[in-house]
Length: 137
Image (cartoon, rainbow, N blue to C red):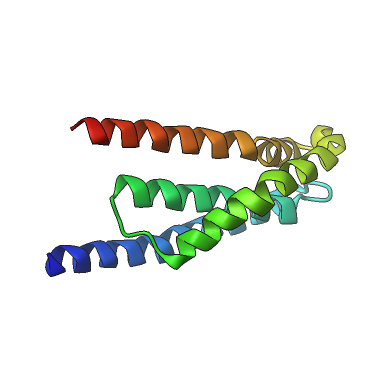
């Protein structure tokens, strides 16, 4: 049992550090791409918030599907996702709606922020369904 836990802990550590690094790399690439294309007033901060928020949800999915141990960082992420981000991101997304016509990057960022609560609800429903299936086995 100790070996299995050590393996799961190693995988969890790799994921908890690896996924954010990949996400940050993708975000930096998109930021450079917006500059290269000359996007006026690129939505850098809102796009970063979208990456962090959806990345947190991705961490939950990977943890659950990989049956990895739940940690204190999950608690902080869950608390922030539900208490703060579920209302702040859509509000921010609606304030960016006027910039939707500026570029596809603005439109995508605004929609990602506005749809975050729906993604959170879908994630919760998916967890409930998976838990129900696992109890039937």
